[in-house]
Image (tube, rainbow, N blue to C red; front, side):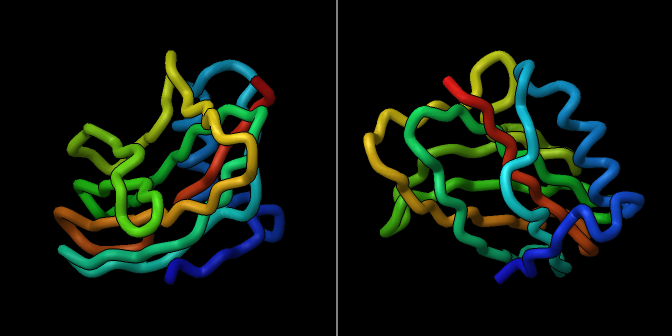
Length: 134
């Protein structure tokens, strides 16, 4: 599981800054939602963490790694139905980026598994959930 750390404790960290920079490309009004998920991956290794999406909000998920050259994000609805993924081969994956964030249609909160995968390279990774009202 990815470790959850409070981004406010160390606002100057490399992962947090890179994620905030990448988030400038998100749809307008997106704000960090919950803690920054951080962990370390070896090549071809997965980390998973739970993400709960609330009704009435739209979401984006931003990841970053300095050393993992191809970092992938997969959003899975239990028992493993793919609900979202990034389609890039780089170190800054985004699910629900501009112009189309994810806006769940469920009328209740739904908990998803976020799978963080180091397809190429190894190192520290960070992932932040962003949200705004519909």
